[in-house]
Length: 318
Image (cartoon, rainbow, N blue to C red; front, side):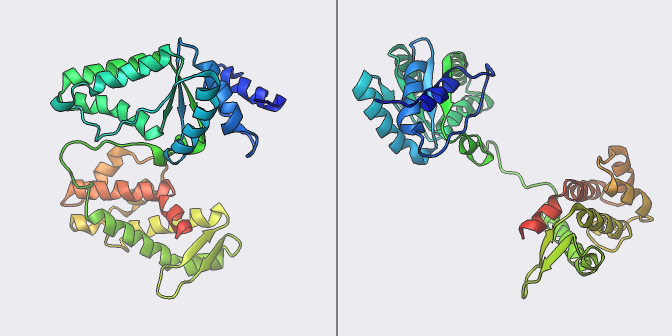
């Protein structure tokens, strides 16, 4: 194998990052990252004392395995192993040896200076499986999985390919457990959002006239108009006008909690316009409605949609 000086530089940056901690590197396409740099770095990291893991997106597993096998298995006789693990992996009485086998394969790879090729979901599945069994009071299985995970945390060295994808939110796993519960204020939370969109649409034409350089509208036949906020002043003004409409009782999104005893317009506008909602103020307003819990949930939902710019972010995407 012939290597270029810049490839050695990148490989050394992977092995010995200047920060001494987790780091991210960027290299141009076609510079030999997968075919040359990665095999070199992984062969050094797999030194028998630590477990070297190469984590790649699942779509690249087959291609990466072929390259690593051609470079390392044939050249220096290194083991390249892949141990998939998911929530469907059997660990019951009929597969009692699955958990010990998982740990034995990794330990054997470490001792023989092999390299573990893994996908992000396989790594996360094993981490979550121990916590799930702990939540289900399966203490024996949970203890073994969590103990080996703790051992891995002290001995592995991970190299992530396509780190922007591997560490992205979309690739994270969630293991739901327990009985299914409806979302808070369902289905009224959806009518609140629809009412907010209706208020925003009512203000678009006048808002564009007042801020011609900050807002651009694209009307769609029979559909919701597309709003392009070019500057934040139009966005801020839209949020202020919506808060004023709600505080003035223009919309019925709060009357789902019942008729208010003296609509608290001033205090409600103060809550919706502030960056942080004061729980005491929200509770004081919610008590004016027969259903205090429903009113409190609706106020907090409206506040989050307005002050965290969730509503205007959705309008930009629409």
